[in-house]
Each structure stands twice: as C-alpha cells, then as structure tokens.
Length: 367
Image 1 (cartoon, rainbow, N blue to C red):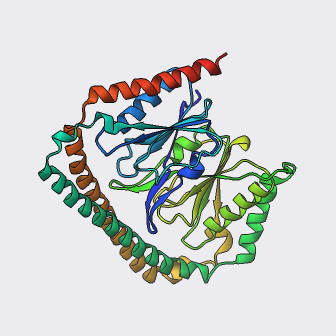
Image 2 (image 1 turned 45 degrees about the vertical axis):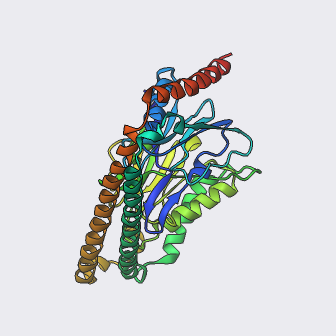
Image 3 (image 1 turned 90 degrees about the horizontal axis):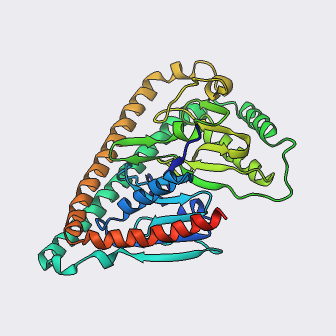
C-alpha cells in the first residue's frame, strides 16, 4: 500500500538557533496559501483538516510538523497539485514562490480583540519575553552540547584513515551516479527528518524510507566521516543531474544525516543515536565507517575519556530539552488568551474558503 503522506520538519531547534528550510522545502509550488495570525487562532487545526481532506480524495500530502509540538502541523503540500498551505508565523517569513501565486489568509479576522483586555496584553508581553528566554537558553545549551560533541569527535578523527574514507565515498558516488549523468544540474531539496523537541529527539526516518527498495544504514562514531560522505555524495548527485532530497541534522544543521534518491528508490542515512535503526528486511545494508576507517582498538584506547564526554553531553542535551519543555508550556499559556478571544465559526469560514479553492484545483487537475 502506498503511503498517502510524507512527514518532515522544515524548522528546527538547533545548536545554531532556530533554523528554517522552508525556502527549499516549498520551492516550485504553483500556489501557496499563507495563514497569518497569532497562535491559538486555529491555523494548525485548519491545516490538519485540509490535509485529511486531500488524502481522503486520494492525494498525496507532504506534512511539515512543529518541532515544539510534533503532533501539530506547520504546513502541508499537495504533491500532485503543487499547492502548499503554511502558517506564516512559524515559517521565518514567506517561503519564496517566484513562479507561483501567494495568497494570504488573515486569521485575525476571527479574533475579537475586545476580549483581550489590557491586563491580558501585559501578561502576553511578559510571557513572550519568557518564551524568548526559554528558547535562547535551549539554543545556548545545545551549542554547549555541540562543543562537547566536538571533543568527542577529536578522538576518532585522530584515528581515522581518510584515504579509506574517500575510497568508500568515491565508490558510492560511482554506484549512484554512473551511467545516470544528466547535462542539467539539479538543486537538492533541503529538509529535516527529525527535530529536537520537548519530548527529546523525534524523527520520521522509518516512515520516509519504508517504501524504498534500498536503505544503507551508516554506522560509526562521532567524527568518522558520515556527514562528509553524505555531503560529497549529495554534491555529486546535483552535479550529475540526479534528484536528491538532502536531510540536515536537527541538532547541527551544518551536518547532513540522510539523502534520499527518489528515482533510485534509495536512502542512505546516519543510523546512530539518537536515530539508531538496524536492517530488518531485504534491501537493507550496513556501512560501518568505524570498522572500515578507524584504527582498531580506538574505542578501547579512549574508553575512560569518551565515557566522561558522553556523560557531559547527555546531561547538556537533557538540560536543553527541559528548556524546550518550558518553552512549550509558556507558549501554551500565550495561546490560551488568543483561543479565548477567537470566534471559531469565523475560522470555519476561512477553512471553507481555502477548501473550496483546493477543491477547484482538484477538479481542474482531473480534467
């Protein structure tokens, strides 16, 4: 059975702050609906309903989840229609849509500002400051964790056979690109498969790769060349005109964690904690960068030092997650004021307005 939805993140809570990939994830759309308005005015609920309606009609939907509340949606794309709907408040401005139409839907129409009293406004401003602080503390703590991770990597980088690592990379480039060269270069689509959330690390790897024929699970240690391999492979694919989806690390967006080649029905990904998986079917294989590129006994030689680093790293990651949990709690308080002042019958009318526009596009596409 073909999956009717694909699940991603296009923003992340990272060691380098809030990071957005909407400009790449939403490129090439014919039409984009941007929902404007404060939190609590029903935007995510409307987006979810529109996604369900499209899937009920047999359309494939790309779902972009909130890293603050992974069960909620920040946006969707109807793959066949090339139409997107996104919450403008969380997409770092309006995703570029040079050749398509952008339609703004103002959910402030549903908001009765008379129900947000002056004391509420003061409280919202106070909470907004605390929310900014909670996010800032989370990002600073993630950055400290990343610096600790750099210490961890050094032990393995010093023990690595870079010539062997490059041989492995070139062999993969040959596998993926040989006899598939195209005169026109491609531009990879940049996404997140996971995010740091108040629940901890959360990912959609299994769902994104479930229907692919080949999955390469890269095993290794920090600093064993996994991200570098993926960067070189992605660059070669783009140069040779091969369609590629490029998934950034939700902790450090400067690193890559997965590539998917849709037309080759293949994924290759970093399968280590916190997204550690193992082969469980035909077409799955392991690429062990530790065994292939590291000096034997590296783990054992630095076991004491690495154990201490792992403990410090884990503590910082837990601390950062607690700051995100606080951010979620504060955001919920802010939302509650807007929920109380929102006329949801107006929200339903706005949803019908978008739904009718989508229905028209569906009808037109079936002709």
